[in-house]
Amino acid sequence: MASLVSPGLAQSLRNGWPTAWLVDIDWPDTPVRLWDGLGTLKWSGKTFTGIRNVGRVIGVGGSKQVKVREVTLELRGVGSDASEFLEPTIRNRLVQIWLAGFDRNGVKINGDPDLAVEGKADRREVFVDESRKAGIRLIVSEPTYIVERAQFLRYTPEWIKETYGDDIAGLDLLSRIELERIPWTKE
Image 1 (cartoon, one colour):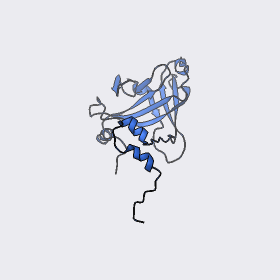
Image 2 (cartoon, helix red, strand yellow):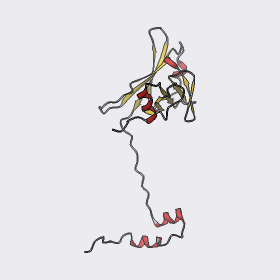
Image 3 (cartoon, rainbow, N blue to C red):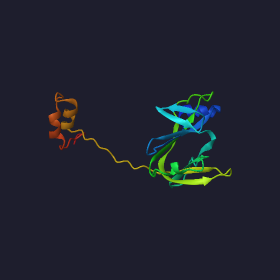
Image 4 (cartoon, rainbow, N blue to C red):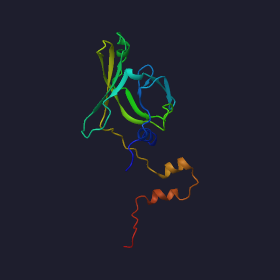
């Protein structure tokens, strides 16, 4: 049976090695990149800031229901003034969440992380937790489908000449025979 995760992540999960969430939010001023570890993490030319246990990802998983899935990103302990997180409009901004597997020492990402969620920022909520610290939740909506427009490329003699040059023999014959009926068997 084919694996649903990348080989590196599968190896980390199979061996019980550390895993982590990587979150990339297309924030208006500059991208916000966080991971649930400690310190900074570099992957694919991007730097993620560790938030350890003050942040979490809620709602990632599979479902057989046809509906828009909502995933919640939660950041606790933002202080009494959470206005800096509420100011810019981020509705419909891209949010990507990866699950990364690490090597046995938990130092290096093992292969490529798996993209678990790719959705749009929907809304934000401010909350107060049991220790009376403010927090913020970002609700991300992931569509059940993505509509892609079909792309067609017509291999006309003109396009072939423009792309490959004029010295290809027989191209001028194509326009003469393109509407001809060509029998492939004896009639």
